[in-house]
Image (cartoon, rainbow, N blue to C red; front, side, top):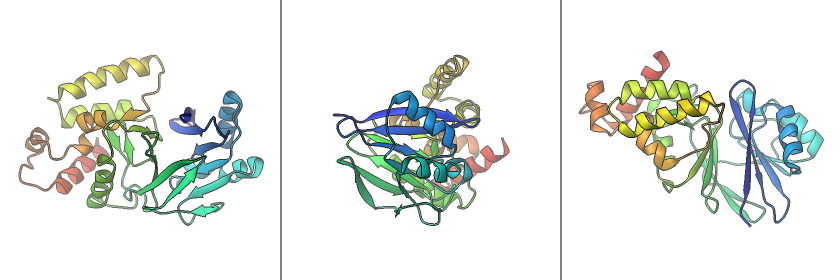
Length: 251
């Protein structure tokens, strides 16, 4: 039976996701920034939490960890250095969840410990604060070349891969994307759809890799029109990416 997914909002713009295996009844939660939101999502679905997957150490992904673990007895998997982790994992590791393979993809840049949880059998990846809809994470602990190398790992996944990211940043990301890639017809159409979705309070997450490859400027530093617009025709992809990230910080 296929895995089931339930996305829920918390704080002002965060998303968490429950991953449920109907055959075994096991349920994982991706991140726990607010315990109350996790419990509300479990109540709404009727699922019982067995696992908690932590993407990185920032407070809006971990503040509810202790309470969720205490009240559910869930098994916590995540990067080294976070209190309450039961199974420390790193990039290139994998584990099984209810018979489904979960692969870890290490994407340092936003933080040095950032992990993406990839379920190849379900064609789904949880990217935390690395890759957003038409955006990418701010570089708090890494630099441009590091983040570009990390994004390339995600770009290598099958194009139909479904991407759950951890924030509803899409309207702001859309405005910036248009400033970098104004002639992109696919981007223009995507922005129109996003504006309509947000006007109706519909989440813009999840997305998919094919759409991001076509519309996300952070994945498109090789594009000749973007390079020409930046005056960086002869620069490396890493240099173009870094310039785009710098401009987003100032946007």
